[in-house]
Image (cartoon, rainbow, N blue to C red; front, top):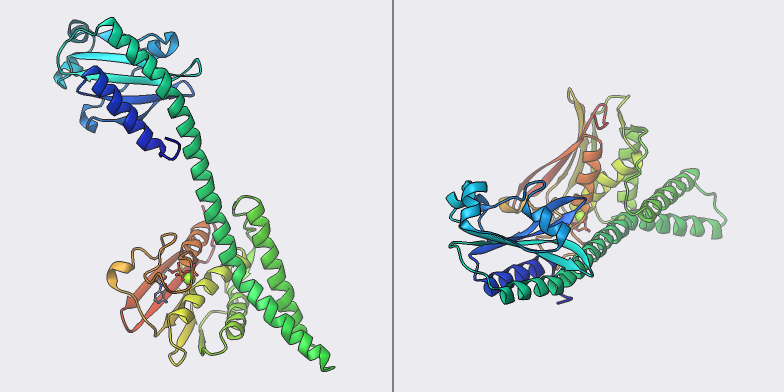
Length: 366
Ligand SMILES: Nc1ncnc2c1ncn2[C@@H]1O[C@H](COP(=O)(O)OP(=O)(O)OP(=O)(O)O)[C@@H](O)[C@H]1O
Ligand SMILES: [Mg+2]
């Protein structure tokens, strides 16, 4: 039972109750913050019966004693249930270590006698499965936490890759120059510092459980594109990157420059990964009335049409054998959402892909 997901446990509980009681169908409700939550139902949605405030289910929860609603009672109090083909109801508690966890509501198509022994068995069963459900609920919460943590760790590792590669390359360059007694280019030091800061920011975000603590500041797109281009030429020396810049002098968006760099880098990394070295990759930036489009145009593999709606989903990769986790575009989209931006894709299979990032002139969430 431990390995069962919570949903499976609920189905098991419902099916067992239905079998033992001879009911037609039913629902499992758990109580949270004084409210019922339907966690499983073996009946179609149009036949759902929702417990009313101060109704029978609340009474069962309070007293931990089952209640039977005969056809006669239902006709008087709930004629709408009769219309749904339900002629008798039996509500029994789910108890976890003396505390009520919720109720199981069973629906019968005919009025029938429930003898005392059956009622006792259902009550005892409610105590056993109540315990199982409570543990299963705890387990599924833990499973979700582990899943979230795994995604967070993978996203951090993904985002650290580029700054760490850049840091390592510059560090080697500087060491070489130093050992040859040559002057060290001050621009290298500033890139090194910038990438170190970026890496430590990513680590800090990870420590804060993936909360995007993006500082909203001014982001000069000229500077950010330049950083991306320099990093690219360093990390992909075999590829040619053409830069077409139609941006006005003052091309500024309100966003964290490191985050915008992350987005452009993720897309450039894909372009490099899916384009042979003898084919061209271009980055083109311009201005439109509401936003600055930045396009990364490659002449590589391209994508099939049915793939285009999937590429922003986490863990998606068309080719499982290719390097990567299927996270770069998921992360990029998340960042752009934060700044009211968007990302558009055009691709022709076998010919290439154009990814366009659109950041509004005032890239802030309203
Ligand atoms: N420029 C491109 N050309 C062809 N296919 C692409 C391109 N960009 C993305 N894709 C497709 O979209 C998928 C998802 O891309 P994404 O960047 O999210 O993940 P990834 O590159 O596979 O792995 P990761 O980014 O985690 O290293 C890719 O695996 C690939 O199938
Ligand atoms: Mg990628």
